[in-house]
Image 1: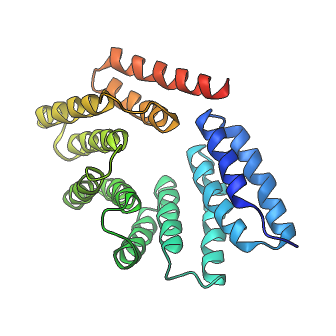
Image 2 (image 1 turned 135 degrees about the horizontal axis):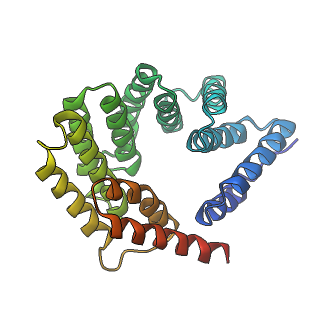
Length: 252
């Protein structure tokens, strides 16, 4: 039995995601999960399970995403990794799964554990910390804890603004804040602040020199329906076209 070459597994996974080939990504991960089990490589199983829970969540496969989340968390404990950044990242990913399936209190508990670990283990200006606060804010919004959600989004913005090239992620956060304002105050009362958020998000996605890669395509695809909801119909169409063009080039 030998260790799986996870660097090569992840490199191919990145290429599949860059081409928007989620079906291929799932086949790839499932194949290597079986190989990791045959090899007895539990660290590889942990890494692959971490990816599979997110992929299944995005595909709307709630039961499968929960199974992978619970199996991956169990591996963290089995391998004695509870006090590592890896454990914190697993907590964040489990939190996103639990939020997606409506287990918001469980999700918030996962985020709080990750917050504690990251505070002890990472530089405060780390994109993983920014991602944590974005996801925590989404969970708090679902719990209608709007003040805490806004505070969490503010923390995420403070971090991401210090990381070069984070304009697409900041744009997504601003659109999430627009939705939070709508939910907390109503569309009519929050319209001016929502307009500020959407305009700022637009400006960030149009930043001169911004690399238009798979990461940018994912941001465009995620932002498009929100822009459309707030009346930016032409721009939403343009963002979808940009994402499709980037994915098409990656496939080619």
